[in-house]
Image 1: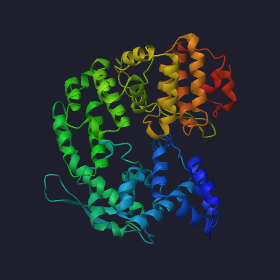
Image 2: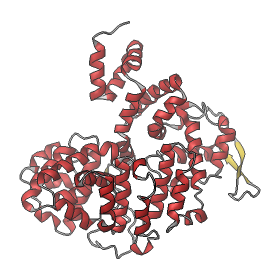
Image 3: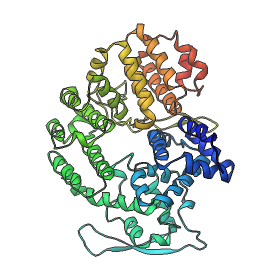
Image 4: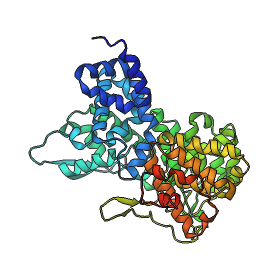
Length: 482
């Protein structure tokens, strides 16, 4: 059956609202076949997931899903179609976003139908090759281990602390007995994906003793060893990011074991800058800026980016730990735990804990204040809008809105604050991340209220956005409704 006119319309809908097109495809089997085969492609699916990859992660951090259960099932159905058609080629193309779909797949999608409970004997190997200690895994144990492995997309949040040891029983079970549990090991490429994670664990060798080898100048040799490994490039880069996060993130200056010279020497490694994207370089430089300050990082920014405007965009998108406690700006007190979520009497979350509030110091403030202060208002508006527009794809921190408000709104003079605040609200309203931004900006407002920082904020134009703010019980709405 031919649809000579519909294809143009459907392709336009794909570019404007991908999920609307996927939902429309469910109207009939004929329409679904036409859309899946003639309008959508593996590349368009991967592009859609990639453009929303950070939004997915940030919503998950806030106990929500970016996609409804029905929308996620539509995406899995489309993904499975391309998996069957294109096999290994599609895995290579889509593995960077595959973890997002796996994270929102209920266990019923993976496991067989079990009528009676069972117990398996599974070895826990010691890394030095001693005789394994056999442990008993029942169905609940296996479910827990798969949940721990797939609950987050590790490629989007590479972290040593969430990676199991290479000799962990889950990997033995996955290699030897996954057919006892998985309904179809090829479903969503589940088995090859976990096999690649196992390869990462083996290359990183994340025992406490081996992690110690990455401290100080040893970081360079560990990074070079990972770069020389046979991992797929995307997994190799994730392993390096996990090691850098673990070794460079010190929660007190006196706890930092990697010198600023060693950090700078990373950028002297052959091909270092060329192996990373702009967003990844922004993430690396943001850690360096927080830990070592502008004097160390500014020359590296000049190597990595075309100008300060570009550098600031990727620094903000890649930064964690930039929201300070106003009562302890120098970080002299004990590190704070993550602030818990507050829930109202109806069970609705009315305030989220900060994304990374357990670090209460950082050396980034002088550099950011001085660099932003050297730019015109037009440049700062352009940078701020660019950060908001790129956040669904590249933002890493749920406190991004808090950081934008602190540096772009509170950081400017009273005569500019209304213009900057209005532009910020105009940018976030209608954004995929509006829900996340409203909470983060409300968090910044609450912190500023504690130390009188809101006195410099003018609200003449910003008030017109009060009716378009979604959450009426947060500090942002209260401020613009004054």
